[in-house]
Image (cartoon, rainbow, N blue to C red; front, top):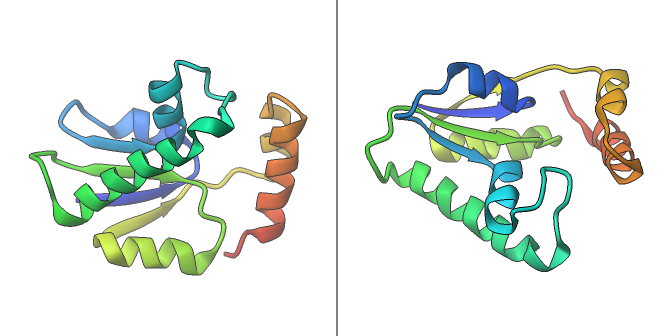
Length: 124
């Protein structure tokens, strides 16, 4: 089963097993750079997105013997979420978190700007 999870990685961490495929752009950034979750070097952006896109394509084609695939992302636009869920035959799961909580968790001003933009763009 493929699950498109919009929201927290914590939800996935509480449910995933060692037999599941996890596609989480934050974890991909950490893996290819050894930088922490909030440090994403611009020079590696194309690489990070290509790894993510390749893994999403593997989910679509059901490559491997994984039990469940979890795709973690922000996807503020309804059409983008739905298109990806349809492409993958995935169940869409939205984890709600209010703007104030997200801003309190922000680690720097760049993240606060990103959060503000996300809430401006978000479509229910």
